[in-house]
Image (cartoon, rainbow, N blue to C red; front, side, top):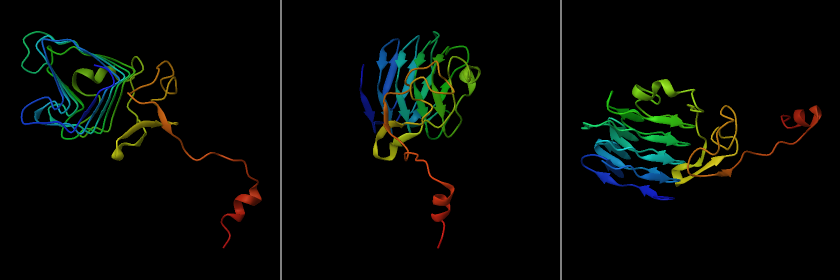
Length: 197
């Protein structure tokens, strides 16, 4: 799956958008936003030996118990080994960003930004991957997520090869789409004049 938009899907059980059961899809440059699972995995559930490969995806404000963005290893008898590269998991509701069953889920993350999720960001089986292989916990600075604009501000830590993870290319599904006000030089007298009444 490439360049897909999973938006406002609702389930009364699990996996608001994608359910991997004994399958290992490649999902690239996709956006998961405002999906809702009454049970587990607001956006995605990974079970029964599945090893999906997620590349440059953006997960935003998905809602679910036991993994507001992704749940891994639930009801699995065989280890699941998902790989996430250059992904954003931000502002999920009701739970931790990535929930996993210890000993059953063996995730690998690189150049990922997990930030602002209600129940926690780098927790459980992914806790030791923060600060390793370009993984960060910083506001991704999305241009206007409230209006479904998931492009990045030009000062976002998710822009290509920018600090603090200068070894990572673009993080997330969307490029730079907005910037701050341009800076201009001014004399001290000009600055003081701006504050005179």
